[in-house]
Image 1 (spheres, helix red, strand yellow):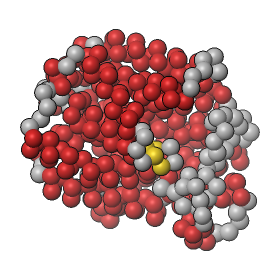
Image 2 (cartoon, one colour):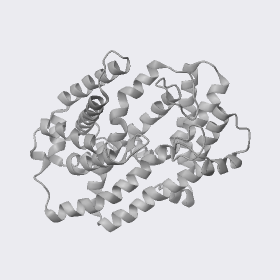
Image 3 (tube, one colour):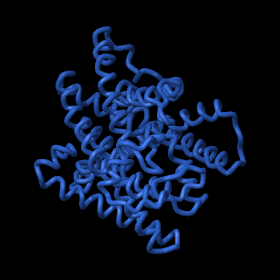
Image 4 (cartoon, one colour):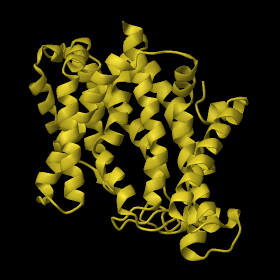
Length: 356
């Protein structure tokens, strides 16, 4: 049973990572007024996908990381786990910022600012130009690696909290709590969102999602409850998704505070539904899922650089947005997996990008 439980968590993780391809491709065409490294036409339909998924999309990756940490700390000491976070997160973070992210801002400089200099001259711009940290108009940014940066910081903050909880003796098992009570825990990331918000990404909120994964979602009894209640949770999640889309289309309006609370509730409902559905249907382990699980971290690290490069090319090749999107998808997925295949063959790149 432990294996099956682990399999569905691994499978959920790589499926969410693969969703980043359409998510970031649609960011090229977003119509909510935000720029991107390369910007195509404003398309409301593709932006709907972003609106429908963002409240749970990154939160589930942090929650899954919390679940994985609970499993890891059953086999490792806190010291071993901390050292492993350095090799698995900090080194790929630094390597990615030095080797991969500058390529995205190179295309941003060319696309938005008419930059004509060489790649390595832009490298100097990357580290010296004052910026808002998005990198959308060039300059320094951690790019998609903000997730790895946050995860590294959160993992280190979590260790003393976890050790303290162990010392005090754990609270009554969350497994005893009824499903509605578990659903109410969305209040923790809601409150966490008030802490250390950097560019719309709150360290406090993501810490809360991570700890919910560690203490709640890794619990066997909770997982059984989620599997049993998966249909009801999915119904709640889909209803919230519909409300989110209607709000985006201007049919429904709400004050920012109410919207913020609703979005965290929606995110948590979908996470619970996906864990329950995953436990029921995603326990499979075969060569394909094994490969996808093994490559998912590297795919996360590389994907956005290839999406931006492919978008820059696609927008030059054709004016048809639908053709552009398919072109970006095919090119970026192929280039990302090719990067993984090349990197896993060399000791140096395996070390730099934490490839098993």
